Length: 566
Image (cartoon, rainbow, N blue to C red; front, side):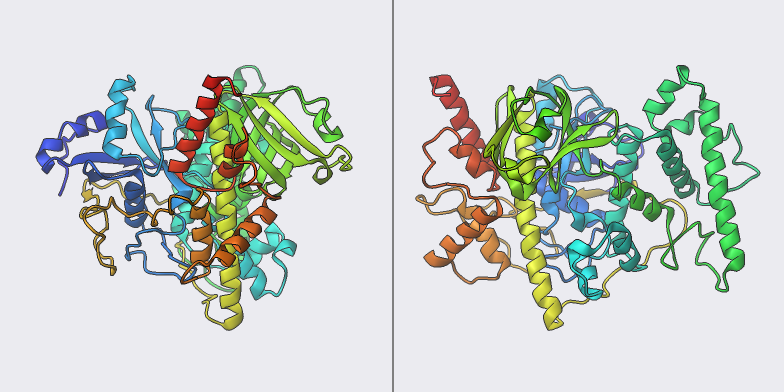
């Protein structure tokens, strides 16, 4: 099915065409490289269904385990799917931290709610990375690289990892998704940069965008107003109060591009082999790499990479020494390692806590976010202070708590995947050379086609699956079998862990062992003994995934607040 050239560009106009597609609604999903794709969804299609279609259409290398499969193969539940999300851009121009949609939300209902909430006519859905897990970097997995060079993963520095990862990326499409989101975060100021960093990254982006430096045309004035695509807005806005004008920024950017071009020309003269594709500006360990990959190597090394920032305030002066030095107003940064307390103005991390060292965390709606840890795990803490709880005033407590919960569960799942890969590598069952070659040419984007892609029907299973379709009464794709009525919500994560170990069944002893393992990773969540206490819901929430459980727990907290128990 093809959309005509005069088809509406915004979602409001597309929704009006539902009658032309037998009741199915055209939904346009936007990407950060200014491309978009249109999908047909029915009244049962979920956000998860739509994310899966996006991953398939753009060619992400989907895996059900750590053996690569063709990107044309449709997998009902790829490992990396929960790491992505659709974000609502309700004002048509910016993205908020709390705009990620629930994977189980019905797409049509989400779009219908825009009119009720007086959203901008250009409101849209954006496909973004939500959880910046290292497996999405595009390189061969870090633990696999460490195994190949016979080093512990903890001893593999970032530079050594880049050197040993190899010429071919595991998945260039994942690298491209990381790149376009990194450019957005740099340009918008979400990742603060110094002027020198801004010019360096802008010059690399310039080479990616235009493919090759051309001295005759790439002169001051070439970019004009397009300078905003390469230099962060914050720096350009400050030009009015500094000695550097917009023209100065462009001149400095082109000077940096020239230095890369000069270095590339010198390298080419000294090389005995011909370069592949266009001019090679960057190399890594003796082989050429793309400007896109060079850009991401710099971004991956930034302390702000992968962080979601939340402005908070709190007086924790009576806590351990490291905490007493925190300002009253700071930023909590949530990422795959845990929590940073960040000074964005100085681009410095004031204080950090690894996700394994956090006892528990939670929130009070529209009031605060809090977490608890042992004072011995932080710098300046002797352990004499025992367990310490920090509280930060913020209206985004639920968003922070949910994000940290999702990272905690993903941390557990990735650790299980690493254990599985290790056993396969030791037995020789894992292909260590898997990867896809990258073309060294200019910029590339996801094609912005006019084709309409249909969301799955018959229970949501996309065409091409070898597995039989689910029973008609299931929504697609079907969730794991529900736990028995007497089982606590945590059994979903237990089942996930046991599935990762390919257990055929779960005996009582294995269930207890799995629970013990989870408690040891997150320093003991007393699920059974503290179920009736105020913070029991938070303890479970901080370990176990599941949107239904999260809704139940949130309602429980609200009821306790209403009844005066909190």
